[in-house]
Length: 479
Image (cartoon, rainbow, N blue to C red; front, side):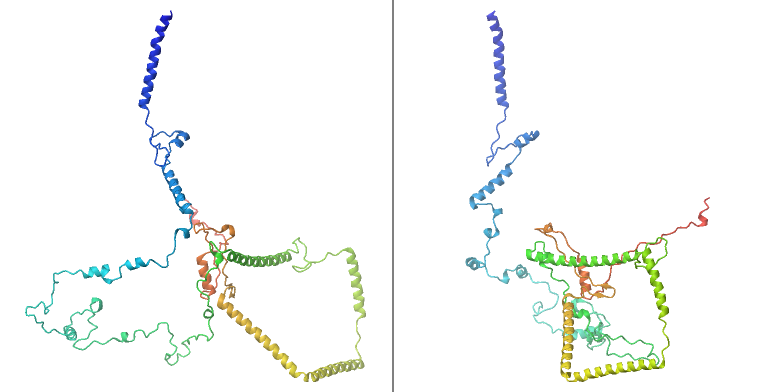
């Protein structure tokens, strides 16, 4: 039984060993050769086509270019100690202000013969050019006939009235050159060219008026002799902006411009608050008396205190006492002696007043020089203050123009301060946010320089009344 078992199991084990050995050989034959490593050292897995999942992607991704770049950066660090991108311009470049004397000596000197245009013009053919006129060189006899002079030729062409060429090979008008042998003179328009000014006024030329038209024809308006406002203004058309408006301004300039913008905004808010208070007072005065259907006791805006019972009783007593006093105060007619006494008292009072005034006048005579001096000093101080004020206004007009002044109904606007906050500033022009408007700046500049009158923007108004549509009687009958 044992032998039979071994005989049974023997072949099977041998077959298994053979199959396993054959499969191992087959696997060795089918196994792909390993990919060669790259020059940098990282394994190259470009032959692998399967990239299923993150693991396969991480394993088989090609990082050759990244490794080359990193290796170049390492090579730069070995040579220079750091990468070229981190080095400053002063470490990479230098400004050569002297130059190399050796190179300067070896360079060829400038010559017009080396120019391309000169080389092209110098290229001439050895074949003679085609000629049409008889010259001494082309004639068989070697002698040149005596030709006509330019003046004689022009005279003959004028006689024949043949077309002649002017400047730039233009054909002259036959009406411009005269018949015969006479020389054509310059026209009157050519002689007076450059002397006429189309913008000059005819002040000296007095137009002769016919009899009876003196009162009909209007006299020309003469310009005033005073200087114009626009001639006094020296504001440039384009003002140099403040340093704080830059996209990368200095800290001091930016803070200065911020303080200026804050002061302007505070002034505007104060004016708005004053206007709001005034409007509130007007509104409270208008709403003092409510419309409750009762008769108004006072005018609009006045407050009337409520009358109580005790006050009413006191008021009645006061009215009764006032009536009694009015009855008792009825004055009797003065006698003649009383009127004379009152007239004498009034005359004496006036005489005393005149005497006191005369006394003061006599006392001030001694101080005439002092009074004159003080008066002159006051007048001089007032004149000086007036002149300083005029000069200050002229200087302001000269530097700032008409900014902030009211002309007619409207006020000339002042230029807005375009400034950005610290968090809005950018370090490059790519992230810069535009501020202001060029059209608004140009229009305000024209107004400030008295070239354009100040105007308010005219906005379209909404229609207050509704359009009523009517249907005609003829259209009501539908057939």
